[in-house]
Length: 162
Ligand code: PNS
Image (cartoon, rainbow, N blue to C red; front, side, top):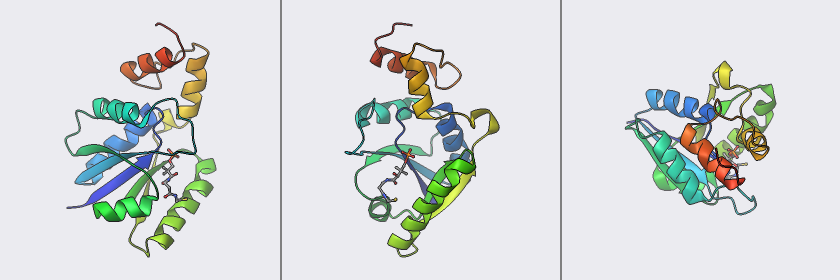
C-alpha cells in the first residue's frame, strides 16, 4: 500500500490543486491532502473552511482523505507513517523554493520523507490561490480558477453577491 501526503495552505483550493490531487490519487493507493494550520499567516479561510472545501471538491475520489496539521511536515508524516510528500510545480520560479523544502524535509526526516513533484497541467500553470483572491477581491471572474461553490465562498468573504 503506497501512501502520500499532499500538504499545502489551500487558501482556497484551486483547479490547479485539484489537478494535482486527481493525478496523485491515480498514482498512490492513498492520498492525504493536508491543510497547514500556519499561525504566522492570516488566511482568508479558516482551517475548518479549507478542509470542508477540499472534502467537497474531492468527494468523487475515494482514496483521498482530507486532514490538517500544525508544526513540521516531517513530524506529521512520521505520526502518520507516510514517507512521500507530493507537490505541484507550475514554473521554474517554484523550483528553487520547492527544492529547498524537499531537501530540508529529507534532511530533517533522516531520509524518511521524500518529495515527488508533479508538473501542473499547462492550463493551470498561471493559477495560484493568491491571484484568485486578488481577482475576486475586485469582483473579477474566477469561474475558470475554482469550482463554483468555492467561488461563491470567496466572493462572500469580499462582500460580493454573485
Ligand atoms: O501551499 P503552500 O503554502 O505553498 O504550502 C507550503 C507547505 C505547507 C508545504 C510548507 O510550508 C510546509 O510544509 N510547512 C510546514 C512546516 C515545515 O515543515 N517546514 C519545514 C520545511 S521548510
